[in-house]
Each structure stands twice: as C-alpha cells, then as structure tokens.
Length: 387
Image 1 (cartoon, rainbow, N blue to C red):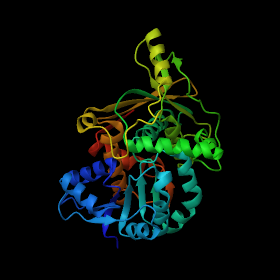
Image 2 (image 1 turned 60 degrees about the vertical axis):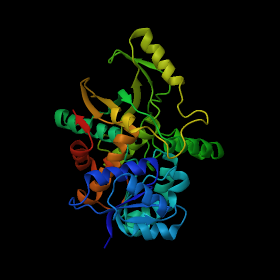
Image 3 (image 1 turned 60 degrees about the horizontal axis):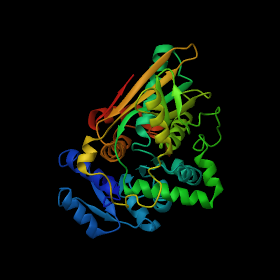
Image 4 (image 1 turned 120 degrees about the vertical axis):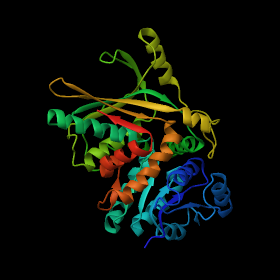
C-alpha cells in the first residue's frame, strides 16, 4: 500500500511550489487526497510548506535526484510522483527508472524531446512489466495542443465520419513569461546537441517520439508565411518542436486514430494586417527569448500578478479531403507556463490515479487519458475546449 496518493518532487522550486500551493488550496483536508512534498532539503521543504500555507502536518519526503535508492524508496510510497525537477536530461533519468521499476505512476513537465526518446528506449519495457504509467509533458507543453488536436479529431469523426488528415495549430493570443527552469532546460538541450549530433537529429525529427513509425513530410514552420484563409501572417512558434512530436506520439499510441497520413504544424498568428502583420511575423521569427546568458535563474519566474493576468487562446483548423473545414479552440485563464501549468500537472496526476486505468508504458496525456483529463481541466483548471 502506498503512503500517499501524490508526492510533489521539487516542491521547493518555482513551479513545484505552485503545484504544492494548488494542492493545498484545492485538495486540502476533507478532499480525500493524500499528498506530500518532496525535495533534497528538509529545511527548505519546511520553509515552503509554511510559506504557501499548507498544513503543518503536510508530510515531507527527502531524496536527491542522483540517489537511485532514495528515489526508489520515495517512489514506492506514492501512487503517482509529480516531478518538476529539471532540466530532466540532467536531473530526471533516475526518477523515471525508479518509477518504472516500482510500478509508480509519473507525470512531469518535460519539453526535452531527445531525453524523452532516450527514456522511451531505456524504460518502456520496464514500465510495461511493472504497470507504471509514465506520462511526459503534462503542462503547457503539451496538454492544450495535444488535447486540442484530439478534441478537433473527435468532432471531425462525429461530423464527417473520419479524422482530418491535415490539422493546423495556431496560437492566436498568449500572454505569459518563462521561468529559470525553462531557460535552464533550453540551455542544457543546446549544450547537449552541440556535443552529440544524434540529439540534434532527434530535435528536428517530427517523428522522434514514434519509434518504428514515420509519417509523411511535415511543414517546418521555421519562416514567416501568409495564410490566406486566416488573412494573417504567421510566425514560428517556439514550442512547436516539442508539441508536434507529442501530437504524433498520441496519434501512434491511439492506433493512428488520426490516420497514418496525418500532417500537423503549429505557428503563431502575428498581430496586425498587411505590411504590419508581415513586419510583426518577421520580428517574432528573429526574436529568441532563450538567447544569451542573462535569462532568469532556476527558482525564478513570473510574479503572481503576471501569472493571474496571463492567458492563451489556441485555434486548431482541420482540413478535410473534400475541402470542408472544422475548427476547435482551446483557452486558458492564467499565464500558460506557470499559473496554468501548475494546475494542469496536478490534475493530470489525479486523473491518472482516480479516473483512468491502463497498462504500464510511457505515454502522452492524450494517448492515455484524453477524455477524463479534458473534463478535469475544464472543471478545475480554467481551460476550455470547444469544437
């Protein structure tokens, strides 16, 4: 028997603290949810517990990310481990191994596709054997996009009797910033790719997360372009390289429910019309928020006001073979990376242990729990899905 439903590992970090705060506020005494805070330092865990107003008797669990025995002991005490300890390629591998070995469910916020592929290759067999359900990318990358495409395809099948072979993900509006953890993950990926060309190959491969399957050529989305159907200029979207890979993995996990000929891309709709829109798209394409070394440090991130006033609005366009079009829209009522993400990963963990069953393995959110997770997110996390 597990001691807890959930352990939040990394609860002293910026995002982990937000996850613990959300659980304390929404799933406190009387909710029936038992959870603990985990991290390296007992003293820091105590400080964060008190700072977020969690009950004084909130259990605290210590384990170092590089101590396999401690991680295995921690994993064995929980039904599901939420981990926000990144960069995952530097600090996450031993925890995946521990959960795969103990049969413990696992959710993270990973946007590091090369590491995810390495974990699939290394641990999927063990997860299947133990029954562990390991789910990557349970935050803004990539739940709104993963479930947005799934929502559109369910509507397409209901209306047209088949999925849309071509889907376009378009970021209409987004207000939010990124934290030191995101900055550190991007830096670690760039350093690793510079040392190992095979990592770069995975980063640019849209089917990097579907070993054994390769679909049709996919749009690159790397340069601005004009979309006549939207009457708007489009710019590259910085998160497209991870989101598109997860969407293709979901398709594969669902037995190619979107078709083996499925084509998907993501871009941002640039503000302004005509020449103004073109100039905005070109400016966005040139801007790299991860460039340089003066980004936020791990543990830093947007203020509460910035998180609470953030939002996102995503459009998904499905194009049918007969020329018909079907749309889906996903919105979130908080800053995407942190205010919304902290709620999404918490609800993903609860969905895994309360709402869905399934064989062990390494999954995407949409590949394992699309319908019940979408329901949870609409009821509890401020997201909307319409089609």
